[in-house]
Image (cartoon, rainbow, N blue to C red; front, side, top):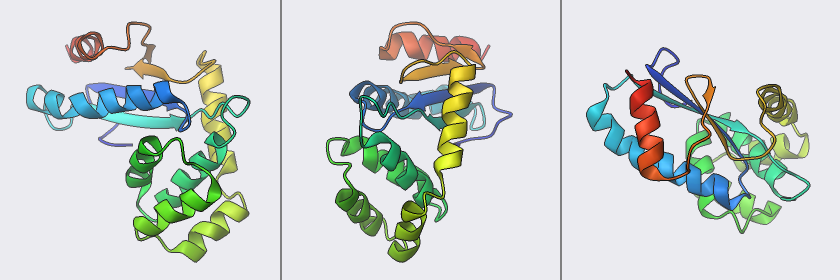
Length: 166
Protein backbone atom coordinates (compact mmCIF):
# COMPACT_ATOMS: atom_id res chain seq x y z
CA UNK A 1 0.00 0.00 0.00
CA UNK A 2 1.22 3.49 -0.85
CA UNK A 3 -0.59 6.15 1.15
CA UNK A 4 -3.11 5.87 3.95
CA UNK A 5 -6.44 4.03 3.99
CA UNK A 6 -8.16 7.21 5.18
CA UNK A 7 -7.30 8.91 1.87
CA UNK A 8 -10.16 10.53 -0.06
CA UNK A 9 -9.35 8.29 -3.03
CA UNK A 10 -8.36 4.66 -2.54
CA UNK A 11 -7.30 2.82 -5.70
CA UNK A 12 -7.17 -0.96 -5.52
CA UNK A 13 -5.55 -2.64 -8.49
CA UNK A 14 -5.68 -6.37 -9.08
CA UNK A 15 -2.78 -7.28 -11.34
CA UNK A 16 -0.66 -10.03 -12.83
CA UNK A 17 3.06 -9.36 -13.27
CA UNK A 18 3.25 -11.27 -16.54
CA UNK A 19 0.21 -9.55 -18.08
CA UNK A 20 1.11 -6.69 -20.45
CA UNK A 21 -2.20 -4.89 -19.79
CA UNK A 22 -1.59 -4.98 -16.01
CA UNK A 23 1.81 -3.40 -16.63
CA UNK A 24 0.26 -0.71 -18.84
CA UNK A 25 -2.38 0.17 -16.24
CA UNK A 26 0.20 0.27 -13.45
CA UNK A 27 2.46 2.54 -15.55
CA UNK A 28 -0.55 4.79 -16.20
CA UNK A 29 -1.34 5.03 -12.49
CA UNK A 30 2.28 5.55 -11.53
CA UNK A 31 2.65 8.25 -14.17
CA UNK A 32 -0.34 10.30 -13.20
CA UNK A 33 0.21 9.84 -9.48
CA UNK A 34 2.83 12.57 -9.82
CA UNK A 35 0.34 14.83 -11.60
CA UNK A 36 -2.42 14.08 -9.10
CA UNK A 37 -0.15 14.89 -6.18
CA UNK A 38 -0.11 18.51 -7.34
CA UNK A 39 -3.92 18.74 -7.40
CA UNK A 40 -4.64 16.52 -4.40
CA UNK A 41 -3.43 16.79 -0.83
CA UNK A 42 -0.60 14.48 0.21
CA UNK A 43 -2.89 12.00 1.94
CA UNK A 44 -5.71 12.15 -0.58
CA UNK A 45 -4.58 9.15 -2.66
CA UNK A 46 -3.88 5.59 -1.56
CA UNK A 47 -2.76 2.89 -3.99
CA UNK A 48 -3.16 -0.76 -3.05
CA UNK A 49 -1.88 -3.56 -5.27
CA UNK A 50 -3.44 -7.00 -4.98
CA UNK A 51 -2.09 -10.07 -6.72
CA UNK A 52 -4.27 -11.75 -9.32
CA UNK A 53 -1.91 -14.12 -11.16
CA UNK A 54 -3.60 -15.81 -14.10
CA UNK A 55 -1.49 -18.95 -13.99
CA UNK A 56 -3.35 -20.70 -16.79
CA UNK A 57 -2.18 -17.98 -19.20
CA UNK A 58 0.94 -16.67 -17.44
CA UNK A 59 3.05 -19.50 -16.01
CA UNK A 60 5.51 -17.19 -14.20
CA UNK A 61 2.96 -14.81 -12.63
CA UNK A 62 2.51 -16.78 -9.40
CA UNK A 63 6.24 -17.03 -8.74
CA UNK A 64 6.68 -13.33 -9.54
CA UNK A 65 3.96 -12.49 -7.00
CA UNK A 66 5.77 -14.63 -4.43
CA UNK A 67 9.01 -12.78 -5.21
CA UNK A 68 7.27 -9.43 -4.66
CA UNK A 69 5.98 -10.61 -1.29
CA UNK A 70 9.39 -11.99 -0.32
CA UNK A 71 10.86 -8.57 -1.17
CA UNK A 72 8.12 -6.95 0.92
CA UNK A 73 9.34 -8.73 4.06
CA UNK A 74 12.61 -6.86 3.48
CA UNK A 75 10.90 -3.51 2.86
CA UNK A 76 11.30 -3.61 -0.92
CA UNK A 77 7.83 -4.50 -2.24
CA UNK A 78 7.38 -1.47 -4.50
CA UNK A 79 10.93 -1.66 -5.85
CA UNK A 80 10.48 -5.33 -6.76
CA UNK A 81 6.94 -4.60 -8.01
CA UNK A 82 8.27 -1.98 -10.44
CA UNK A 83 11.13 -4.24 -11.53
CA UNK A 84 8.78 -7.15 -12.24
CA UNK A 85 6.53 -5.02 -14.43
CA UNK A 86 9.50 -3.51 -16.29
CA UNK A 87 10.99 -6.96 -16.95
CA UNK A 88 7.80 -8.97 -17.33
CA UNK A 89 9.24 -10.98 -20.23
CA UNK A 90 11.94 -12.31 -17.88
CA UNK A 91 10.27 -13.74 -14.77
CA UNK A 92 11.95 -17.14 -14.51
CA UNK A 93 13.58 -18.02 -11.16
CA UNK A 94 17.09 -16.98 -12.20
CA UNK A 95 15.88 -13.50 -13.10
CA UNK A 96 13.91 -13.16 -9.87
CA UNK A 97 17.08 -13.88 -7.91
CA UNK A 98 18.99 -11.38 -10.05
CA UNK A 99 16.37 -8.69 -9.35
CA UNK A 100 16.47 -9.47 -5.62
CA UNK A 101 20.26 -9.16 -5.69
CA UNK A 102 20.06 -5.85 -7.60
CA UNK A 103 17.73 -4.53 -4.87
CA UNK A 104 20.22 -5.55 -2.20
CA UNK A 105 17.94 -8.13 -0.62
CA UNK A 106 19.17 -10.85 1.73
CA UNK A 107 19.36 -13.59 -0.92
CA UNK A 108 19.40 -16.62 1.45
CA UNK A 109 16.26 -15.25 3.15
CA UNK A 110 14.64 -14.49 -0.23
CA UNK A 111 15.39 -17.99 -1.54
CA UNK A 112 14.16 -19.62 1.66
CA UNK A 113 10.83 -17.80 1.42
CA UNK A 114 10.42 -18.73 -2.24
CA UNK A 115 11.36 -22.39 -1.75
CA UNK A 116 9.01 -22.76 1.23
CA UNK A 117 6.25 -20.84 -0.59
CA UNK A 118 5.80 -18.68 2.51
CA UNK A 119 3.61 -16.12 0.74
CA UNK A 120 1.23 -18.38 -1.21
CA UNK A 121 -1.60 -17.95 1.31
CA UNK A 122 -1.41 -14.15 1.06
CA UNK A 123 -1.53 -14.30 -2.74
CA UNK A 124 -4.44 -16.75 -2.63
CA UNK A 125 -6.29 -14.39 -0.25
CA UNK A 126 -5.77 -11.57 -2.79
CA UNK A 127 -7.18 -13.76 -5.58
CA UNK A 128 -10.14 -14.92 -3.47
CA UNK A 129 -10.89 -11.32 -2.48
CA UNK A 130 -10.80 -10.34 -6.13
CA UNK A 131 -13.12 -13.16 -7.15
CA UNK A 132 -15.48 -12.19 -4.30
CA UNK A 133 -15.47 -8.62 -5.70
CA UNK A 134 -16.29 -9.85 -9.20
CA UNK A 135 -12.78 -9.85 -10.67
CA UNK A 136 -12.36 -12.50 -13.35
CA UNK A 137 -9.23 -11.25 -15.07
CA UNK A 138 -6.40 -8.79 -14.52
CA UNK A 139 -6.12 -5.91 -14.57
CA UNK A 140 -9.07 -4.77 -12.50
CA UNK A 141 -9.31 -1.44 -10.73
CA UNK A 142 -11.55 -0.20 -7.94
CA UNK A 143 -11.85 3.48 -7.05
CA UNK A 144 -13.28 3.90 -3.54
CA UNK A 145 -14.68 0.35 -3.67
CA UNK A 146 -16.42 0.93 -7.01
CA UNK A 147 -15.22 -1.12 -9.98
CA UNK A 148 -13.76 1.07 -12.70
CA UNK A 149 -15.27 -0.02 -16.00
CA UNK A 150 -14.18 2.91 -18.16
CA UNK A 151 -11.48 3.18 -20.74
CA UNK A 152 -7.87 2.36 -19.76
CA UNK A 153 -6.67 5.75 -20.96
CA UNK A 154 -4.98 8.42 -18.91
CA UNK A 155 -7.58 11.18 -19.27
CA UNK A 156 -10.58 8.93 -18.53
CA UNK A 157 -8.90 7.33 -15.55
CA UNK A 158 -7.68 10.63 -14.11
CA UNK A 159 -11.16 12.12 -14.53
CA UNK A 160 -12.68 9.21 -12.59
CA UNK A 161 -10.10 9.57 -9.82
CA UNK A 162 -10.51 13.33 -9.53
CA UNK A 163 -14.31 12.91 -9.48
CA UNK A 164 -13.99 10.38 -6.64
CA UNK A 165 -12.08 13.03 -4.65
CA UNK A 166 -15.12 15.33 -4.57
